[in-house]
Image (cartoon, rainbow, N blue to C red):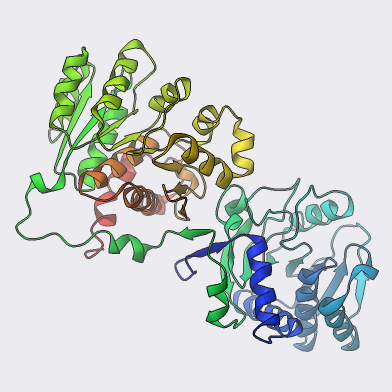
Amino acid sequence: MNHLPVNLYRAAQIRALDRIAIADFKLPGATLMERAGAACFAHLTTHWPAARSVGVLCGVGNNAGDGFVIARLAHAAGLRVCALQVGERDKIHGDALTALQRLEAAGAPLVAWDEKALPPCDVWIDALLGTGLNGEVTGTWRAAITALNASARPILAVDLPSGLDADTGHVWGDAVRATATLTFIGLKQGLFTGAGPDHVGALSFNDLEIPAAVYTRELPSATRISGAWVRSRLPQRMRSAHKGAFGHVAILGGNHGMSGAARLAGEAAARVGAGLVSVATRPEHAALLSTARPELMCHGVTTAADVRRVLARATVAAIGPGLGQSAWARALFGQILDAELPCVIDADALNLLAAEPERCEHWVLTPHPGEAARLLSSTVAQVQRDRFAAARALQKKYGGVVVLKGAGTLVVAPDSAVYVCDAGNPGMASGGMGDVLTGVIVGLLAQGLSLTDAACVGVHVHAVAADRAARDGERGLLASDVLAQLRTGVNPVMS
């Protein structure tokens, strides 16, 4: 995905850009449809050069029109084409109808799908449903999606996988699991989060040669975090630098049986370049942590005064890794709120916040969907149904910067700007990954990055480190494996 644009849009915005190109820049809709079909056919021949037969499953809208163009071009190239249509044929109109007429005039008929198993083809084209979908897929449409997924052949989705919500990444009952998706005009934000990454496959983009001036008429709904942007926030250090220039992090956590979480967060903060890192933890854990990682300054704390002494030396703080929800945990949480330091709130500290909500402008909240649901008095299903709406609601209620973790992690800034991380992998679904992310973000805060920049750079560096660590396989990936890759990510001049 390194060559994708950074701007993301909602479906209504894509339709607006399409209208602007047609009405104001005199680009006929039929021309755009021809370009989309040609781009898909070129993608097919490039990625499956040995294919001798192509199946095209079409609906009744403009997405189907793209499919008709693909079928015509494949037929002209001498491939065996099976063009099947779902839905009522008399609903095909406009540019899509013109494309259908050209297909049939070329001698490649469109056949109504009879809900039987799809005939064998080397590659299938998903041209069923476009960005206008906003309700449950049922009946013949759902059967067609099921048949595509059961075909056991590569699937190229036209613009987006049918059944996937272009705005949210929600699956409307069922959705095509594409091998690859070629999307047009603008990147749809739903391709990058929720269930989107499970259905999109390898994502490519084509702007259909729309003039750059068209894009000035619609502000993006979100921004994809890019490696280039991250590098711009991590300048090379001055040769005269010293540890005092890079902040002092305080990590609060590590309750009984959970000292490892505090260590992971502390080491992550150090690995991304924080000058000093202190850990305030249970007294019985302090010596153990110092022995395991001597660069951490570990303090056993039992009273509020103990915690205040640690925080008095810190420039930034993080609380949550291994914290628990005991009286000891609540006491630590109260002290970090009183200290008014820039801070990261994670794990059980988020659960304590959910129990007694308050708003703060100098913190970064890093909930996973379960924690987000508690913070919003909602459910995980509701959060995941529209992650963009949930992340915005969290920021509006609690202030600061919100990082909604998961596939396609979202960052919502105080100015309501939304950022999306498309790096990372399923191997990150293991204990301790969130603790490492907490340490990464607070370590970047310590070095002077703003709340928003620390959150965006942090989630990207963390995810890319996990991708590097997963080169030998995703299953069995450990948080400590990710720790070992962090230095490369925060030293981009050397990487």
